[in-house]
Image (cartoon, helix red, strand yellow):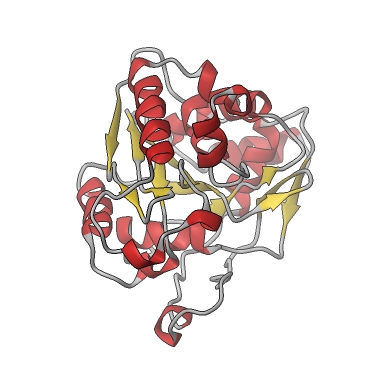
Length: 276
């Protein structure tokens, strides 16, 4: 499928729409897929405000690759990429279709970056554990775009901007990760304590939220150059970089709002972002 005629057919497969929102979802524990809690309620309340998409493109913390890939299979498998959880979680399937057409269009939009059309991955829990609360019927196609771990925050912000045309084609773009995410320091004894964070997590969340609400994204893009609190909040970048994709897609006149904005177990945050 590399003729101009083929590409024209593909570009016609997603009709023009009003500009779709962009989301960053703090996905937290995989157990959020099957538990009832305030964060799941937040996702469901969000869903009531969303227009129906033609398809969904998800950038998940859990597909961290050398180079950039996009899922291009007709029927992506539900990946249970975790261990030590109840069988009920492994039994969950999210049978959304894929979209080879959207995968190819995404590849074209990201030119000259080399994007591999992937037939092996599927939907990891960063995608399905939250999207299932937005669209429980799995009735919209879902593809995933991987995060190239060799690249900087600025690279990912700039790459995201190339995807902006999809927003007026009915494509809901979702980043999924956690802004504050230090698994090594999780206080499991206080996991159920409401909005509980260490001092450095409180500082990082407050500073990051201020930058988000002020539209001051450059310090967030340059996260590796920021304070000690940032470094503790973001010891590795994979859960943070999906936020950078969401910010790269924000239009100048669009409003950014926060929800599920709480700390968890000392060293995690569930803060989520909606742009529209």
